[in-house]
Image (cartoon, rainbow, N blue to C red):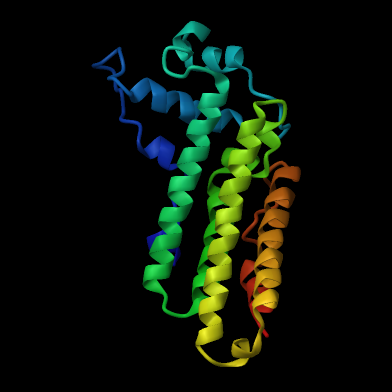
Length: 218
């Protein structure tokens, strides 16, 4: 699965053309993408310090006023990162569901993808956990909660498919499916927290194959 479904180190980075030395001014849209890229990079600070627009502007070597020509507010910058996360994660979930007919294989693929996405995008892990959104606009926390709720719903759907495919999962009730989906989501969040709290040293994919085999067994 990794070769075809796992995201690159950052699709935000991949979407930014190489400005090179022949062109001093970025083309329309490039600066906006650069701002999101640098914001994501700054969120990778193991100390978890809050990113200010002044520090962000200094990192890009532009004025704060230049930042606000591309984003109306700092909250809008974070919304751009959340949109990237949402689009990437659900695009990958769709790929997994199209590739795998087995409900359990779908659930396993989704869980592996979530762990690997965080591992390749440490700064965005802090966004997913809400750590980077602390003291920011409240609606950002609400937005990321909605994204995580959709992910849990995707896991629940995969387990419901497993129910219809016979075997031991066929005897599991609907209430238990919901409980199991919530447990799987808690496992992912726990791995993400462990990753962030360790300064991004304890990788979320560590021994994940064994963990998932236990979690998805009957």
